[in-house]
Image (cartoon, rainbow, N blue to C red; front, side, top):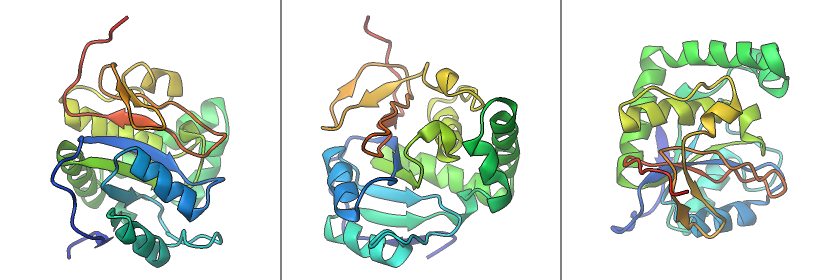
Length: 211
């Protein structure tokens, strides 16, 4: 099966490609699955280093079953996990968070992590993929950096500065809770801490902003 672990049923043939960032903080597994379906997600890539949760249904095996029942493929990418020693920095502010992001970017340069990023990017060219971790606020989570690096691969250009959420947000296709896409330029995180879902989409075909 390769480096990744995945569980799921057949992917629909008609999908809108792209990448979305998802945090399950504050959500039940049923609420998470419903939001993923609203966004048209057909594959979920779990970037938790250790995919275990005290919340029912959100650990690796149980989540994979729930997603498979909803027609969503589950894939765990341990290679994209953030080491425990680097997590406090993401929850901090200013220089501490910037340092944590720099450290994580360095880890993504490894052979296994780079290969996992390539696989994520390729999946995003073909289908709507959600990148999952815990935090509701995406700029406090390493998936923010994963999505920025994937955006660089998708568009062939430089990644947004992953040290500052406002820089990442300057690029963008966005999706609302119903999955409707509005114009942007390739990647935008739209924080929705109240319901635990970051509704940003990175797409393979950048479009010009309509203002």
